[in-house]
Image (cartoon, rainbow, N blue to C red; front, side, top):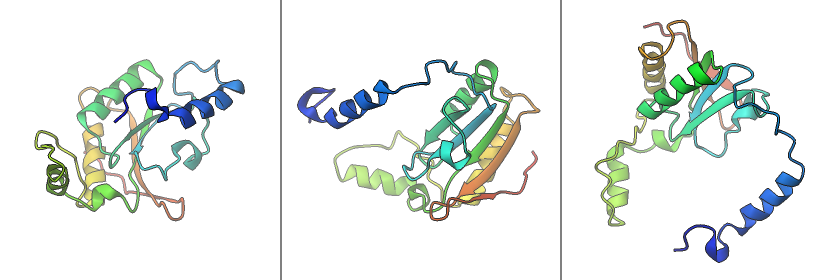
Length: 173
């Protein structure tokens, strides 16, 4: 299997980058979240987090992982976003038809084992109950001793078929 940029595996991406950079206009952006927003969402390629909210590059910090879970790394990143990058509100946004809601950690371990890979040291944070997982993750942010008590935190489930959000009722710790 080719590594790096050898073998032409990434030629399409390099060509697209040449076209993109020829008209690039965002060099003035600072890296701060201009709208004070961080969005935690899934890595699912059907989600366009900027488009969902009518945002543009520079408006928000976008944190993506499988299932839109608030993991230790997401908390670490939110701390940096709040104290260094102007974030004062966080929206956690999982979505409908998520693969993380269709499998268990054990399912993933078994699939990897069939390929000769032992993944038992990893926790995949699969989502047997999406609503409960979202509420848990919102509470995790709200009760973090590393984040300001007045940080605005909300949650909504994005519908990949309609593009609409279904906000979850507020959960107060």
